[in-house]
Image 1 (cartoon, rainbow, N blue to C red):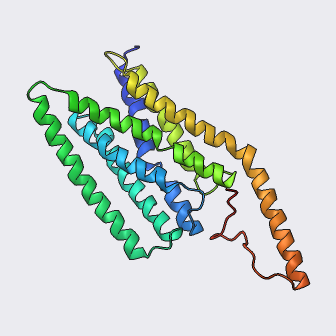
Image 2 (cartoon, helix red, strand yellow; image 1 turned 90 degrees about the horizontal axis):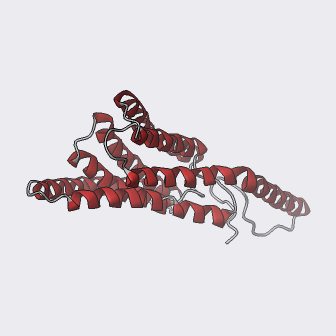
Image 3 (cartoon, one colour; image 1 turned 135 degrees about the vertical axis):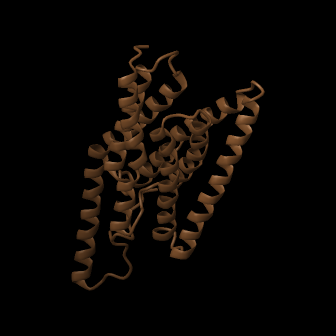
Length: 252
């Protein structure tokens, strides 16, 4: 559109860096809280799957080094975050969660290598259909991955568990990556632009729900705690569910 190699590389590199580290704040938040309630494990699983295809695509296309590294880190951090969900909220052992993470990463590496060899073999014969399919699949699943998080928000009627820093970094990364497409030479990559834009819109939606839903959620929790304290003071409480780091209120 407005070809400018310097701006294309600048925005593309910033976007790749942000998308490489985006999940680190989420890993830290889950570790600090010892809880992943409100964070969709399905989102992480879908993103892990998408990262395999994206990693294969960028290697097939032999893109710049930051873009080659980004999907690998994204995939790895998604696997670690999923393992945290297994450990903290599904009461799996640390050994089990770690094993799942290692096995998934190993299988991902094998699948990615297989996709690369298959696509390059077909490209050597002038057939780029598999390469296009790989890029399309990765773009679709990255967008679809955010939808389960909306269901999680619906369950709690609040945006909890998920790191807002992570969402913000991911959103800015999407904006930077979109800008890099604007200044890229050649035809405009509509598929990539739509994928990035969809991610940005969905994440703006999540951030917009915070001031709407969270105050109500905290008021409900305060009222719940007040009633429990009153029951305790009367000595009549029997079985309650407190708002502890391991027990948060779902409304559905």
